[in-house]
Amino acid sequence: MMPTTTRDASDAVSKSRRVLEDLFAGLRPRMFDVRFWDGSEWPSDAKSPKFTLILRHAGAVRRMFWPPRPLTFAAAYVYEDFDIEGDVLAFEDLCDYLANDVPKMSLAGRLQLAWRLWRLPRMERPRAGREPAQLHGPMHSRERDRAAIHYHYDLPALFFEKMLGPAMLYTSGMWESADEALATAQNRKLDTICRKLRLKAGDQLLDIGCGWGMLGMYAARNYGVQTFGVTNSQAGADWARARIRSEGLESRCRVEAIDYRDLPEHEQFDKITCVEVGEHFGAAQFPTYWRKCKDLLRPGGAILHQQIGTAGHTAMPESAVEFSKRFIFPDGELAPLNFLLRHAEQAGLEICDVEGLREHYPLTLKHWLANLEANEHELVAATDEATYRCFRLYLSGAAWGFNNNIYNLYQILLVKPDQCRSGLPLSRNDWYR
Image (cartoon, rainbow, N blue to C red; front, top):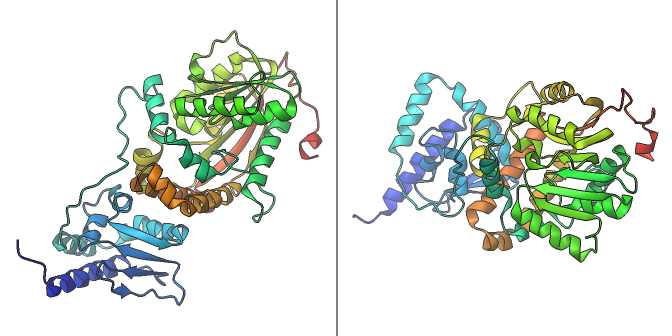
């Protein structure tokens, strides 16, 4: 093999830059720098660029865009063909442009671009670390659902402890102002859920998809209820039980690694919570879910269901959806609010309240992303570089989706009527004391 000359290296930079100039031609002003592998730069149109796109090797641009498939660009970032230095939230605007504007190029322009990409240097580099999920069996069978949960959640506990902070809650906080601490917003969310359910001492609370058990512990500690959390994550259940023991709550809290569908219906509850777990169910499972909740509730019992949903008028780019399903939430599926409510009513539940919380989520994600980036070296050491990059891209992309009204977030309060009586007070004043 002939050694690479300075002229060859310079030629590779010029060809790569020409491809990027074609790709970014409609992006004005371009608010980011581009740094090539030889240290040379293509400055942004702005005095203060929001981030720098760093190309790691001569084959980087080809790896970023060839072959033209939904996962190509994200995988190039995950496996270190390029990097993002600076504001990764601003980088999501570039992703949106590539997904929605570049495909509008003329056919001749796309063919010319493809030819230039094809002629760029090829750099076959090994890809190590987190791999795309490979699930088997019928969709949303118990075994496959456990495998999907294992893929995302059964990382070392340290990873989530550092990313989520001491609250250890993987769900949106509820904010009164953007400058609050994350812990304040998360504590308000827990208390709001308890107040909406009107929990009282002696109530039996079932928490479906309980994560690390923090909602159950909060309700037991502050409202005197008996809580039972179920999760498909064995690692999450183990962590929760250890935390319950350390806080001396064994007599009031229990957590088991069990699919909610396998709960015996003779075990009745006064209240049920399901906080941002329905995204894993798949749309086809919701009739089963709502009927199961109704069967597990005593007459007059209430459910607090919090879920991310689609806003209905637009959708995330195919590339973002594919990235999420392969690298983050395999088999995950978002449903619109009207779908959830229709099936809840068909199961015999009464809808008592719906609250939209969309603008709360990007504030939460911003804190998780800051925690992730602040602990980069420790998290990479606990997992691998690809896992860290997957979560960095996921958190920033999710924030972009909420900020652009593509995703929404709802808290839904439902009851199982007792002889046509909801059992709820006529006023909501006690929620906002």
